[in-house]
Picture: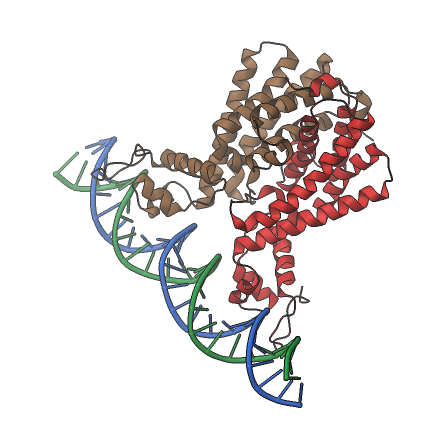
Length: 215
Length: 215
DNA sequence: GACTCATGTTACCATTGGTCACATGCTCGC
DNA sequence: GCGAGCATGTGACCAATGGTAACATGAGTC
């Protein structure tokens, strides 16, 4: 981490914005909550806390920037993973939760802000919201393709999407909050999660189309 | 809310602890995050902020108390709902997410602390953790009964539980964080959630037992 | 080499969570 | 019925925090 800290001789940091985001994500991941201090972050970057306000309008804005980055990165990884899968719609669908969970392990700090942090309304989170919408659109599109190809049951796609997003996001959320041990005991939780998500998707695929029809 | 505020004449509030918890839950529900101030809470209860420390060791302890109360209340409601269902194992299982989601609508403030707030380690959250474990045990037991009765596929119960808890908790979490509109558009989100959870459970019930077997 | 703009610093502020010594009043043994 | 003791509330105080503003420094440009 001393890589972040500039030598005192230099006045300008060079990439303070990125450094602050990295440090914040490290701390969120380590402490399980965004309970760092701007002063603490700035100090580790070798800078006064007031300097942070040159790059982020507020502490909350730092978090929002992390969330936006996270959703964009996730979206990029999902798109790349789908490209590798070729044309098989089911493979392209299954790769989404896979990437989602892998990203959670790679960047738990960002993930926590993305899905366990209350985004207060207002301008601050607008960018993050846009990035999130993009990421969700990919899932919608992929599910639509699957339904048209007959590899997912007919019915209201919103229901299928909700179910899939629910399992994936739900297990991720449980894992992030350390609530997973309660239900699954010890052992390789991440493998269990991946396999459970996959099993659920298969269950949805083979399910009765009547289940997903609107009332 | 003036019910909370004692008349200035009286020195003792009478039930300050409960009043503070109620007020905190109101604010969390309204603001979507536990970003209230102890002073603000105390003022509305008609009391100095220092008085709160007679009832809670810290701000965090207040949140922990709310979480513990929430899990105990949830557990009580689940047990009561099951009792009403008689002996049918499947009905007793389905009533659990139903109660879970209904409680979320009744007490969104508590719910948010229960599942979207990082419980830092330590003594503070010990009570909440115990209450949570109790609540989860009920699900485990019910799923076990269903498997033995043949209304749920064979296989590692931990996987089935994870899947069920995943959808339920995941959709609840998405709803709480206002992320549900992104996938489902407008309309009665709560009905969609309930029905999606139910559909998922049915899909799991009718699924191939091989899906849930350990690798 | 002077102008300028981005970036960082110092000094400052109000607010917050938390503590402490003191005040008040309910309750229970006598 | 009354005094002691304990739970509960108060007021004054503290260090730390997020945030702001005026000033300093440096890099790039003409």
